[in-house]
Length: 216
Image (cartoon, rainbow, N blue to C red; front, side, top):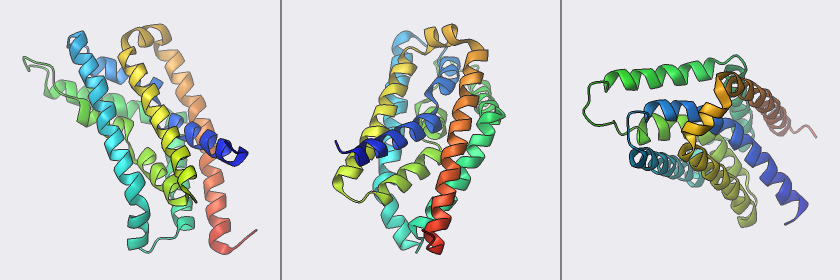
């Protein structure tokens, strides 16, 4: 693999790892599936990751067509995506994103508190928007739209696939991981990832502005 492809894989992997934030989502998954059996939790883990994979692949491969149909340049999309990711980064640093996730999880639990069987949470809220959220979907579209060759696309897909595999493993081990990490460690990790995402998003904005105005 060439240095260019290694650099692309590293950037894509880190970006998706921060956006999906599997360690931060694990406590939500553990809470939503707490009433179910181990078989139920495994089913929800596999199904939620499968749903997220399908959604992200649809946007990854259909993103270029969508941008072209709407006459949006890749530089404009890069800058807009950078702004979106920066807002997500701010939410992560100040823990607003975690708070919204927890509120959404509580709403789902409250709606189905009296159900005799555990609710299927794989599509909503786990698959969408916990794993395949607006940030990860937009980023998948961006990386695939900017890919110059099949090799570049393969590297991006590998980065997405590895992150989804990591997410699946974390979900399958969610209960012991949450017990081991604790709320304070999970919160600190989310803040650190938010700072990294802020830097990545700032670079996207700068690159988008440079490309749009032809600045070398």
